[in-house]
Image 1 (tube, one colour):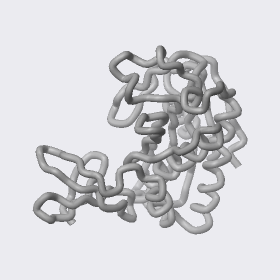
Image 2: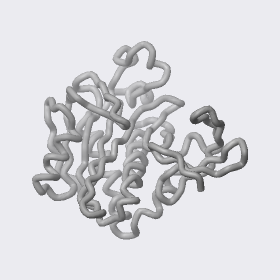
Image 3: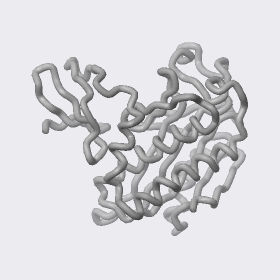
Image 4: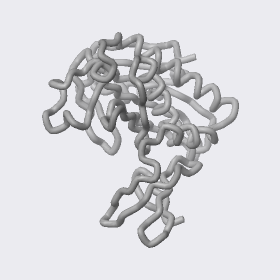
Length: 241
């Protein structure tokens, strides 16, 4: 599973390329990787900038039979796979930040961008994009971000082959996706929580202080407000529960 990996020297965005393949009818399991992205992007439309040939930029096409409300859980699944990959490369401990970031020693090392296409309330396909800092040096990061970002090489003390790292990520993802195909997505939130870096931590949003409590069945963040009210955070909104 997931052994079809096509590597490009330079593309605009692996997400866009994977979407084109999906629209052309490519079966699930196709993965595209680029040594350079000229228009890479992360969540919420943020750009993802990486020096050519140093880091992993990859997008994986899936065609799962799931409810549209479960699509976000596949992004969380991929973040677990990314954490497993980081540790397999010699990094001692990889943690997760909600919803889809991977952290090492309080610094971001990877992010996942899940994008789903829906037709008549049915999931047509899901594209899982990963940006993983593999061989970046500290000088590759903007000075203002050097205290908040790291890479596998900085954390493990050695360089890593990008294709091997990509295939390792695909193998880890295949293990979890096989479980999804057999058992559904219900196991993902609890498994994700075992790596959660910020359980019981406090945060503010729109001037209100909250305590992170748990991850809901749909992948949303359940938090307790100062006045004792439980709220559910999705990536774009807050719903009272």
